[in-house]
Length: 511
Image 1 (cartoon, rainbow, N blue to C red):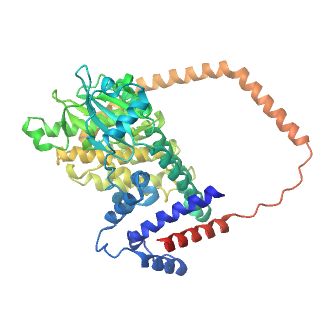
Image 2: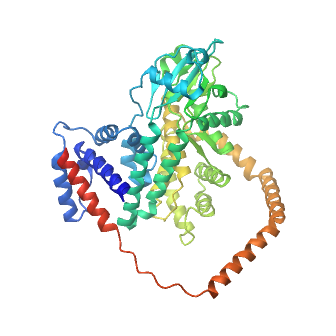
Image 3: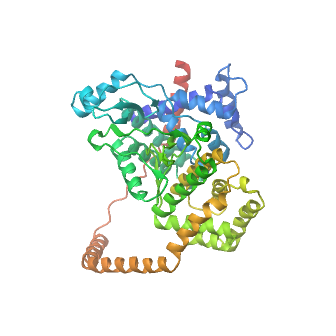
């Protein structure tokens, strides 16, 4: 109970900051019941007076930044969930920058000393001030005794405790939303927070980022024109990651790329094709491919850094992605509709023909546009808009893919404003379709089915024993006397709402 009250106070503080920063000004009130509309107007009386005519994006950014690193991370995560917050709010949240002032070098030295129990100067060399700092970690450039330059990523001190404290409050809010707003259950608020918590948990262990770098490097070792920095496992632990330092030109520096003779349109196509190849061929892709994480080395190869956020697609999701893109390229909308039903994303009671009609409504306008106006990311975003109409299940992996595609397209078009997305994507999509859905793919699926049948046969005795045990337990329960009825537990919702109101009032009075 005490932890619940603490969580409610934290949520009340967050609500207070949102109100102070003027976020409520942009909340539509037309469909609100009169009491709620009155409450919003009363709450707006505590807005800061110096806000002026700032946009909603500016106010959201200011509010999340003021609330701290975990809320910045929450805002960035919600930017990947337009199905939850809406397309326009998601676009506003995309402007949130995960940048914070660095913590002192001496503090970083203390962390390294504790992590390795070695003299930092001997093991790492002289530690220079951070070259980049974000909500979870910061990066230092270090020259080792053997002359190698490395990037040393160090977790912020006490960042785990702070994030987990705020995540607990997010779970409380999600449970309240599910209980108070039945229509929101379709969006699975608790599942949304759980996904954020899983993502943060992965980012808090830099050994997992090192493993992601290693896996992506293994997947792409034969890909011409693409590489990743190597991991120094000897100098990597839970809160420290050491990798090769990348001396290259960031893709954001188009003037320098042009001066040094690089083919900018070719680089734009390469960014798109490498991303699609990783997603469809490997089912494992870099989910934070903005310009700051992409470089061109002296050999003209793309180099990706910072694998803290990665996406995975299983075989079914990859087949769905390839089929839906191919159906739009070829204008075979019924095939695209069937792919949704076969993947289980659309309930069976919906009409395939009607859904194909919806896909046509998305696809035909695209084919009327010029090459530089076509956006695959926008196409997938429009598909997400139909989730409620057709009672579609939200697939978090595909939403992450769509948001990454938005970023990747932006990078490609910054290098070549006339980039033709269909022509760029088509070779990768066709190659995947031919390999996996053609005769060769059919043989591979037959082989996989045979392997699964052999495995099932080997497990059959154990499965039968489990079935027998479960049946005996069920019969035993049926024969047991019924337990006396238990009185219904009174609902805690009124108490939760009352506590939230008291917390908000107390916080407003204290301020």
